[in-house]
View 1 (cartoon, rainbow over the protein chains, first blue to last red):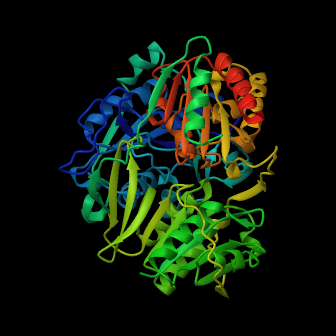
View 2: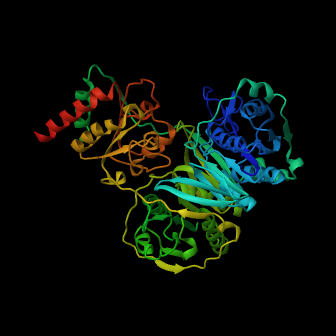
View 3: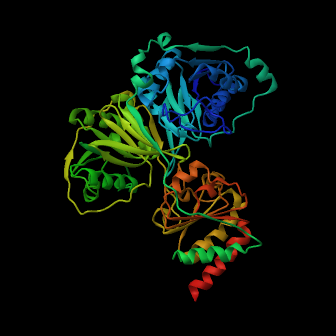
Length: 264
Length: 320
């Protein structure tokens, strides 16, 4: 039996897969007025936390998020999957936060929870960022493992396989620590009917920057050190052609295409 | 300007992407400094100097042997603060993304990532970032120094200008907490055949192949075209093909003249590893496969019918 631990899972709300994604030309921020959903990558981190809970029932799983208050709708899915409670940092002054501003706020929320293990997913599905955990670990002065394709907890240590460009490393870090998991680590569970019913009764604690003791100047655009200057259409790849195959006939067309372009 | 380029290395060689960023930075500023961090890495300074660095700083210490980010943040934070570098550039990899983000927090510095280009506009650094699945190009800037940037891997080709850099050893002092993560076992690369990073032609296979033995068909086509075979993460994870051939976010970034994608749907994680290819030909039976959105030639059809025929035709033409 594993000793119970407190696990924080950092989760983000992103535009739902079917929602149109656009950057608002006025604010130069991602338009978040569309339907939201949990960032898929983060559900792998939650699943890993729930597996720890499955093997040690006293384990507490807290979801920590920073978003407008209406994200509690999406976050209810995390509770339905099995998380115990949600801490949602929601504050007008946090809108438009870049990496340093976001992590100043999130680190304060995590410090208040003081978990043994803090988990992240491998990237944000909207901003394609894969940078939060390393900044959080630095702010909290905690050891860190990223791209974890496996996670074992034993004797107060986490052991993981880290997937890099060159293969798998095996890393070990003592608790408390920060781990970002790859989406190859597990298949997240679906919420059960019982879970969905129970989620409505689980606490969602909405906190402000003031509650966390974060100066408004450290969050939002005021606390950011980067800026979006302009938006443009990406350069097109040029003319692209499309052909439909009919019993292998496309092979001839591909050959002449490659020949025309002197690629043979 | 004072640019510092962080040069990652693997098995005794600087990584290609880092030399590419260095070469690009040297076009903007002829006083670019490079930093190499590791154990026994001083010999790398020569090759780094040839790619545009005026000066190479070397942090060489046994405590930096393992490819772990947090001790590297300690080294960088000290150097950037003491020497006042205005800009720090990284070629993005799993390791350098963690280094750059940790450094951003340590120095309260702005970090822009996924850059596909950077320029000087009126003396200020401006990054070009492809966002939302590359559907929009965003100009990004920084509101304070130092400015940190992660450049998408495979963006710039290294240019050897034959220069010679001044080499300087720098002291290494690590924080107690940043050395608590330990490397128990470092990855050993299994190399099969020629490296896909150097190939002019790549034939890549994904889940649409249906089974691992179908890679034989791709090997035949690759051989006929004089190229190498690559694979997506899904099929490497499934054990169908070796890790060294994996293209994508957690794999290699490749820029061949011709990339033939067979049975690959083309998720963003794969795209970032191959979109720098010259010509992209995709064959997939799903007419809505995302890969068709960034292919030069989109072929809707069954790879099992098309690929063997194409191989025969290429052999005939090349043999003739």
